[in-house]
Length: 116
Image 1 (tube, rainbow, N blue to C red):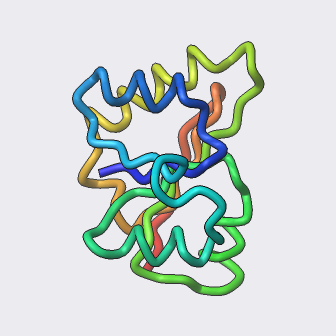
Image 2: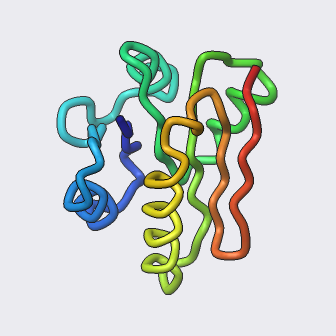
């Protein structure tokens, strides 16, 4: 399951859902909560946080937050369609492998780093 941060465009959430990907948008029931709360929600049951917020990288790499899974999207508006395509392909081919990983997706590359 994907936990979509508030900064994830509603179109991206809709596209994921229309491709049978289970997505829980933070905007629907938890609008305005802190990153710490998002992390807590993502742990039970385990969900991958989908975000455009680089602060989650700080939680993982500077604060050593564990038992967390993050996909960070880095793109400009004209690249949105391509980013969504890359994201969908990644989720379909490596979905389960993305747990306990920090994944960064840009149009240039996908980087998957283990969080252990």
